[in-house]
Length: 534
Ligand SMILES: Nc1ncnc2c1ncn2[C@@H]1O[C@H](COP(=O)(O)OP(=O)(O)OP(=O)(O)O)[C@@H](O)[C@H]1O
Image 1 (spheres, protein in one colour):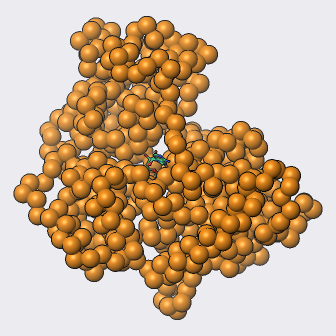
Image 2: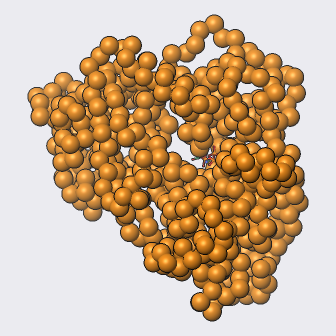
Image 3: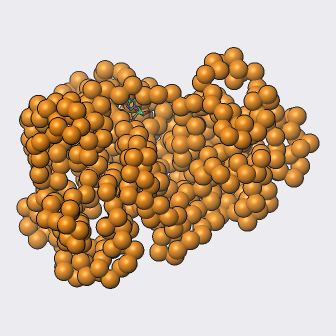
């Protein structure tokens, strides 16, 4: 059974060899047989439900399969990340793992798709010096040079937080560093295929204050980069929102996204502001991290329970270990009975154990005594055998020995949560690894942290909101209006940058053109494509 632990990076082991026969009844009655798959070891796990891609998602997929560079955009919850995750799997299968580099603008976003930050990939640090110095930095960094030359595809998620200057810099480096290879010569990005996704109406890049002040016309967003248009064969906006299904909420959010909403929409939000009692199970979102830490710490101490501390176990290269500290999962996780927690990793979508699922710690299982507790807790925990959860790293991570938290999730089920693994990949090599319980305290979260998440019930205090996109990112996390409570809403802070509006207007007309081109390109049998848009 132990080999299961070792072989499955990023999967909690609720299922073990022989587990099929021990499955609780609810599993057999709830799911039909063909929804399960059997691994080589005989373990039985539920299959992930297949997504039926929309026309726009399919078009992007076809273009990527044909080797085109594609920018995938759209409102929050339109399935950008879901599509990118699928694409990564396909690309790795086709090109091999070592030629597909998966990156994102922030550590949190990068870890969520098992990639590197774009900065780590590029080998140019924060790019705070001139182009020539950066170029020589890459030429003298053997690993970075190899990455740039080996890559066939570069995936960049959450592009909204990458600046125009940085995007142009990367293109320049790609073109020059890959110049030695005749097949790459002189082409934009040195012939690299780009798969980029993000929504420029969400959080923007952080630009240094002095640069901001220099001139009002300073380029901010990646789409303002000189090379942007040349970089893509297809720029596509996904139009269907999946996260929310209530038309009223979708309309309100669309208005906030673009900074234009009618008074009725505002009234609807005001109704969500003056609710009689704050929902204690709602996640509290704050613009600033100090408020997040303050609320979480206070709530934890208020419980007055014994606290178990889980300290993350990091191994690997020092420079890469830094990325693991970027907040994807806490360095030190303090838990006690009654603590509100959130899963910070997709464990099993089929069982609703997804990044963002919230619940409450109801118990801790000591694995030494757990055999005697097995019968007692078996009904509460979806588990099969205590030995399944044995993990050699646990003793050094937990302050209380071999104890694992047991969480009752808000969707009703109870799970004992085992250790998870996060990796930083450099091509096909693991350069750093973190082991930790995949939970974070979840009475409160920062708005920056929640970009990309889906939250069932949230309360957000927007009185200290700042910058474009922040109110939209906070509110667009919920699935339903019922799940939304807010305070401190100031309509003046619902802002969208006119530059972003112009950009989307421009690409929607481009998109029409691309659609026509796309049908010419992508419906033709491979080999008959004669046009080159570059
Ligand atoms: N074609 C589809 N059919 C049904 N559900 C889908 C489809 N595409 C995506 N989804 C689902 O929609 C939800 C939101 O998707 P996802 O998180 O990828 O959105 P996103 O555009 O990346 O959002 P954000 O901008 O907030 O990060 C997910 O639960 C995903 O599984």
